[in-house]
Length: 173
Image 1: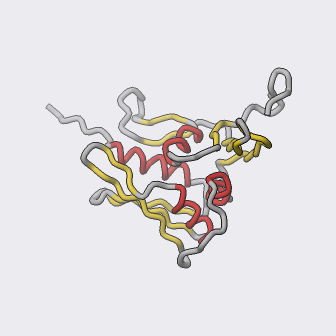
Image 2: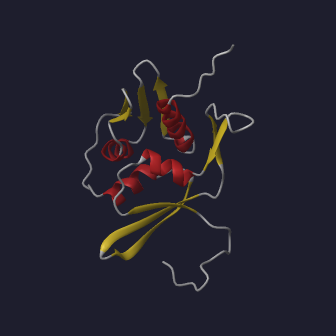
C-alpha cells in the first residue's frame, strides 16, 4: 500500500510567503527544508529592515522550529519609525497584490487604525490538499497576510471590493 505524504506546516508557510511576495519584484523567497529555514532576499534596505522588525525570527510547529531570515541586498538600514503601521507600509511598498492602504483618523478608541486592502482575487498554491482535485489550497491575500504578519497592532487586512460597490449608507470608514 502506498504511503500518503502531506505537506508539512512549515512547507505551507513557505508557500504562503512565496505566493504573497511573488507580486513584489524586490523580494525573493527561498526555502531550505533541512533547517528548515525560510530566507527573504530583499533589494531595498529600508524594506528589509521593516520586514526584519515585523516578522518573527522563528516559527515553531510542534517539535520543529523554522528559522525566518531577512537578507538585505546592501547591508542593514536603520529606520526612524518603529510603529507597526509605518513599518508595514514600507514592507508592502511595491507589492502589486496590495490594492490600497487606508489610515482611519482617530482609529479605534483613539488608537491608530490602518486597513490594507488586497486585490480581489483567489490565490492558489500547491499544498497536497486532499480536498482539492488538484492538491491546491485556495485562499485570499488577506488570509496569507494574517499568517505571515502575526503581530500587527492597529492593522486590518482585507480584500478590496468590486468597482463601484460601496457601503450601504456610505458612512464607513
